[in-house]
Image 1 (cartoon, rainbow, N blue to C red):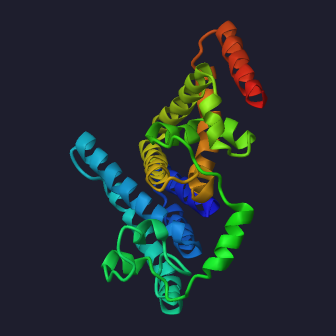
Image 2 (cartoon, helix red, strand yellow):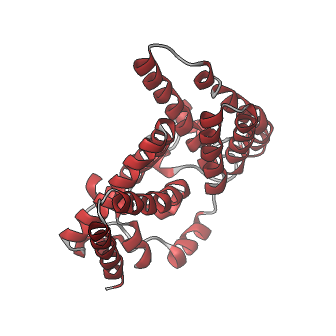
Image 3 (tube, helix red, strand yellow):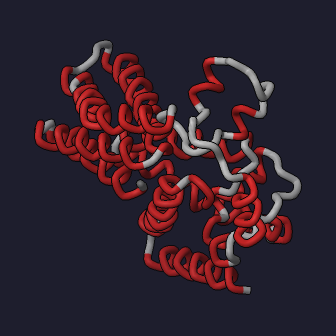
Amino acid sequence: LAFYALVFIYLLYLYIRSTKIQYLILAGIFLGILISTKQQGLIYFFVFILSFLIFNLYSYLTNGKLRKSDLALSFAFLLAIIISLPFLIDQQIRTGTIFYAPGEVGEVTALFSENSNNVIVNLFRSNIPLDKDSIEDLNNIISYKPISNQNLFNSFKQFFLFPILNFRSGDLNAQNNIPFYLLVSFLLIFLTGLVKFFKINNYLGIIIFVAVFLDLILVFFLNQYLYQYYPLSLVLISLIFPLGIYSLFRNSGNNYSKILVFSLILILFLLIVL
């Protein structure tokens, strides 16, 4: 899932740089495969659509008009729909929903009564019954630890403290014991890497920002772990951090400053294991 999403983003970037139609066609194919692979692919499809709309609005406000090459990006989304449509129809016929199977998405349907005939609820309901006893047994074996003191900032910590939390097997409760200077340092690297993507290409920056931001909102409202259902953000974070380090190193001025920045970053990552 993350691979297809990342290749799609990279192909769009190549198209924007060169306006070669073959990159756009390949982007549409990979996006179609992404949608057909798993229900999270549908979420990322809407993420990319939102990014496309924001980018075109930005392009219009800065240039006073919409360029044909920017509007042509919609071809990739249309191609993706054509490719994924047979698979989505098949899943709808077999399970009763294109979003989830079996059972239902509890976070959505819990907002309504059990017998609710709400259109939104029905979209998330499958006609395949969920074996609750098996799920309970499974959760007893591999269940995620409860997240304590969950708020928007603690959810955001999962993103910019990912190197530390990943090393400590994702124990989010450990983030409360991380020193303030580590919080600030990793936040600086994360934001620097994010800004660098915007400097490389505006559309690339918008896609990455929207994807990470919407995943953050979902992590917060659904009280979930970043590594639980959000593979694209995990991959993007793995790119944001090295790019942030590279940007800090390149912009540090003379050789003495470069050595100082490199030493500080090295010390930070060594502190992860402490």
